[in-house]
Image (cartoon, rainbow, N blue to C red; front, top):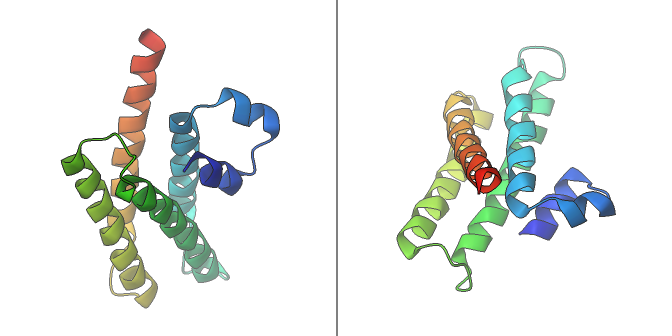
Length: 128
């Protein structure tokens, strides 16, 4: 998962050596969520930009889903299943957003919850 997330952000070698996977996840989630918040799909090119960022978000969640589906993942099985199900929801909801039948808000809210959890984890690591 770490390699895929780093590739998505285009990190340089020095960043790869110093950033943890949680740090990278936080940056990717923050970047995507910020972009989703700033897109006005009614503006010229807005829908194309929305589709592009939603695609990046689905790629991120697909990577996370593959990670939690891996038997080597050390998270508790119940948590892994919950994360996987969130990813499935994101995937399905993305299609509804692109069809214009649902707003992007639920995706943004889920990403923000993940960001909050990653930040809390980061603070705990720094305090230790």
